[in-house]
Length: 121
Image (cartoon, rainbow, N blue to C red; front, side, top):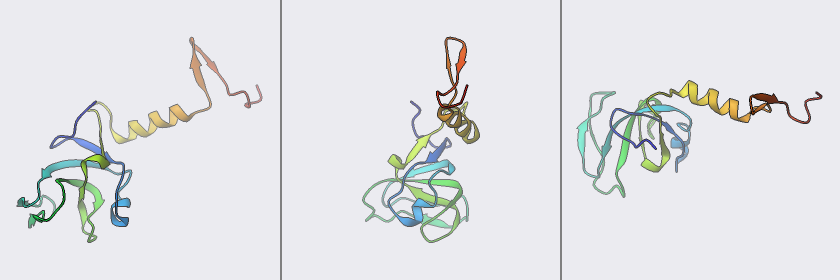
């Protein structure tokens, strides 16, 4: 299993807030794992950004076609458990294609393709 690491790609698979739920299913780049109280330059808007010291946990700052809780486009804070890392050889389109293959009524067995019993064959 691939782990979350800075610069890697991941898919947002969960969220606790309505704003965060808009990002589910989006592919993102992991910019940095921020601890409460960390301050850094936001890679999207260039502003100094702070994860408040009162934050209950570390959060990943991710970039991509996502939105922050206050509606800013291009970055978001995401809990680690709400991210699924992508392997280096699979991109989001390939993951979707593979999921489509797995849900197809056709299955391969011993080199033969077997149709669903309801296919009329």
